[in-house]
Each structure stands twice: as structure tokens, then as C-alpha cells.
Image (cartoon, rainbow over all chains, first blue to last red; front, side, top):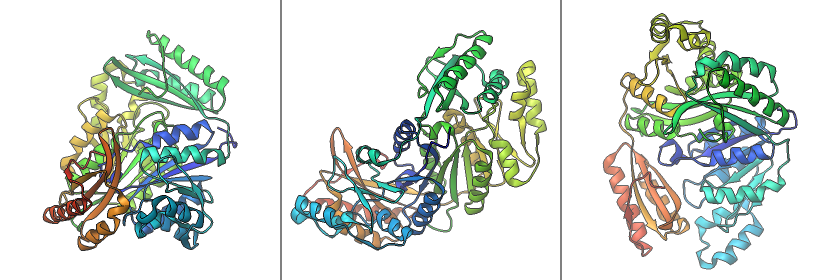
Amino acid sequence: MTQHNPTAAILIIGNEILSGRTQDINVQFLAQRLAAIGHRLEEVRVIPDISLRIISAVNELRAAYDNVFTTGGIGPTHDDITSECVAAAFGVPWEPHPPTFEAMRKHLGERFNEARQRMATMPRGAVPIPNAISVAPGFSMANVHVMAGVPRIMQSMFVALEPSLSRGTPIAMRAVHGFGLLEGSIAAGLGAIQARFAQLDLGSYPFYRESGSGVAMVAKGTDIAALDAAIAECSALIVAQGITPMPGEPSIA
Amino acid sequence: MTQHNPTAAILIIGNEILSGRTQDINVQFLAQRLAAIGHRLEEVRVIPDISLRIISAVNELRAAYDNVFTTGGIGPTHDDITSECVAAAFGVPWEPHPPTFEAMRKHLGERFNEARQRMATMPRGAVPIPNAISVAPGFSMANVHVMAGVPRIMQSMFVALEPSLSRGTPIAMRAVHGFGLLEGSIAAGLGAIQARFAQLDLGSYPFYRESGSGVAMVAKGTDIAALDAAIAECSALIVAQGITPMPGEPSIA
């Protein structure tokens, strides 16, 4: 990694994740998209829909990272309090956003009730993030990007937001798999490879598939030549164990 | 919720989650199991395999919550540093755990190399958490419970750990679904129900399935009679919109 990689955190405002009701899939989507534009995701937090928790987490994370991406809590119901909490975190008024208010009023007509008007209300200074599914936008407030929790809406918002984000050197991954390989047998060798490629993050991950168990070695970083060289050395480690290394997508766990 | 519900946090030590390589499924498992024994999951954090980050997160979370459950970083490779970081967080030596060391030596014989000996090394005072898949255990250090990242091993460790955890009043969920329902149309009514059932957490969640879109209303809490009464009122809200309420597992998103 280099200093040309902005840092990022994800803040999930979601009782439904903490209760185990919903399986989050937003982190993986955002992690992959952020890596592709060179943002280094350094933290994810999941917190409940409680004002003080949201306000303090927003302020802690926006101070610590270049960008914060929030998901959840921007609908029209009583438990959707992310927007006003972001206003409180920044110490600015939470007020109707005139173009959004007007667009939603036109689109919804009589259905633009008090609850839905909350979705056209934003921290002063916010910039809306449109999406292709709903007339209600998310918004960016400085380095805090507030998005929906519903995956398809969040993804559409991220696509709209992406061009406005700075770019870093893309963060790439390479992997090699050894079926029947044991982590404890390659630990010393892998540690030595990591020491030779200090600019990369090397990890090893046991996997258990129907087709067999083994270990994936994964290298992550911005230096493609180094990634390929490190993975070649990992492959040699596998060969030294009498096992044929298998290429594979890093994401096949 | 009541004061009879211990609080909990999950700390995921995992570059592989932050890179988007791996889809976490440990949070949902732990969230559901913790709710069943009455623990209130109040925070999840995902952080990278960096010593200072792990040490500070362990200390922050163990001070803030009754129990902390960590996943990941307890294997034999260079990137597995959770165990020594927990020792550092508690300010105790990280040293071989004699019964674990002996058991692994017997089981592994000549394969019990330096890397694997790390897995028999624990903070002084730790209590091992066995599992049915691997001879290498996790451990509890006071209120910090250190488990593997591989889901099947983590699950086996949690099953072993569970009897030693305190019990709270089980936290239950009830849900009702309205196909074709719009959140903005029931927001005021749902807010009024929440106000009448202050002891429950009520949430509404839009869903998009192949079989149709709509909204799920979910109630969570320890008072079963109140849960049933609140969901009956939610069903009436749906009926008032001219829609037939559908029961359903809370976990069907």
C-alpha cells in the first residue's frame, strides 16, 4: 500500500444485523468496489439505531478515515434516524433540501406525507446521492456518505457516488490454493515471503469445500509485479509439500 | 429489554473481510445464538490484522460490554496475532499453556513445529475453548472469548463455550409482512405502536423478492405477550392499507 490510497470505514446502522435477522451483504460489495478505486477499507462497525451511538460513531470515524460510508436508517419510519444524527454530528441544522423536496412532492403527489418528507430532509450542506430505484436519495455530508441499507438501493447509490470519490492506486489480490495443504506446514515459509514483500499483505486461509480442504494463500497490494512474484513463491511452497498448486479467484473461500 | 440481558460485542479480526475476499457469516450465527441465551449484541467491529488496532479494540470493547467475542487470527501463520494481542491488552505474559501444549504435542508428534506451538500459547490465565474439528483451541480471557475465523470451527467453539456464559431472558423476534406495502404509508402508525410498546424494538424493513416486494415489520424483545400484541397491531396497520398481512420468519428478508 502507498500513501496514494485514501482510507475508508463503513458504518452499518442496523438493528436487523445485530439481531441476526438479516445477513449483511453490503460490506463485501463496498469492500470490493472501494479496493477497485484504490480506497483502503480499514474498519467496519455495526451499531444499533440509537442517536448517541450514531452521532459518536460518525464523529469518531470521520475524524479517523478519509471517507466514511454509512448504510441503513434513511427510510421514513421512526427507526430511521441516520440523517438527523449526521446533522447533529456535524453541528448543522437538519432541514428540507429544496430540490429533493420538490422532486419528491412532484413524484409522490398526495402520498408525500410527513413521514416521506423526512426523506427529503438533510443536514445543511449535504449533496444528494440519487439512485435508480427510489426517488428518495442518500447524501454526502463532507466525507460522510449516507446510503440506504437495502442492498440494491445501496449499490445504485454507490454507483452514483463513485465518480465524485478520489482515486487511489487500485488494490489488487492474487491467490493460490493447495488442496490437502496444512497451514502449520507452510507458516515459516509464508512468513519469510511476507518479510521479503513488505509492501504486500500476505494471508493464509484454511478452506473446507465439498471438493476438498486445504489452504488459500492470498496476496493483496498495489504493486502487481510484486503480487505475481509473491504468489509464485507461495506456489513453490506448496510444491515443496508435494502438492500441486491450484490457481483460483481470491474470493473462492 | 431489561437489566437481565448481558451486553455483547463481536470483534472480527480479518483482513479477508475488509478486502471483500470473504463474506462474513459469523455475525449472523453469533447474533442468533446470543439472542437465544439473552445476550444483547450491541456492536460489531471488523478491523485489520494490526497489533495496535487489535489491542486497542479489545480494551475498548471489554470495558464497554459484558462479553466480547472475537473471531479470526488464531492460526499458526504470521498474520495470526490475536492471541498475543489479547495478552498485551490484558498486560499479562503470553506463554505456553501446559495442558494444551502437551495435548497438541501428543496429537501432532513431529508436526508440532514452532508455528503450531503458537496455537498452544495463550495469555496467562486463559481458559481453553475446545472444538470438535481441530486440536487447537480458542480461549476465554476474562470476558474476552477468542475463537477461530473459519465458520465451522468458530461454531464448534461457541457450542463448547456457551454453557459457561451467563444467561439472560431470551430475546425473541416476531414479524409480519405486507406484500405491496409501502413504508411511507405505515410510518406514522408504526411509530405510534412503538410508542405504546416502549419495552420492544420495532423496525420496518423493505424487501425485494422474486415473489414480490413489500415491507416486513419486526418486533424484538423479551416480553412475549407484548411482542404478540405489537405484531397484532402491525397486522392491523397492514389490513388498513387493504393488504392481507402474511406471517413469516423474521429472518426472511
